View 1 (cartoon, rainbow, N blue to C red):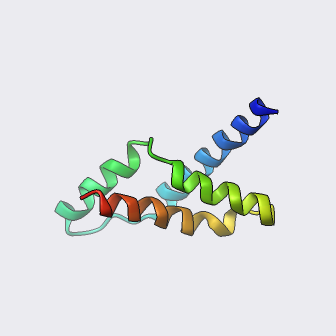
View 2 (cartoon, rainbow, N blue to C red):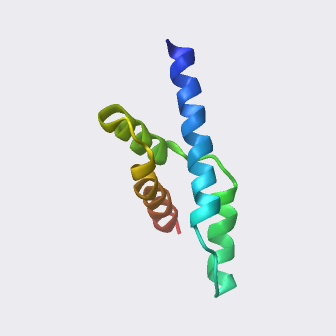
Length: 82
């Protein structure tokens, strides 16, 4: 059971990372977006987005609609860390 749950979390991470690469647009000014892109692309620190996707899957069996909210939680934490 635990291995199955961990495999599910791995899929959440994969789907979340693909969403970030596809949907997050890094524009000008480069001095603002380059650090954000670096931190988001580095991986790790994915607990908040994972919790968002897990809860969405638990209650609705659909994580696609929760991807923007999970990205927002990740970016919000990033902004607060500066």
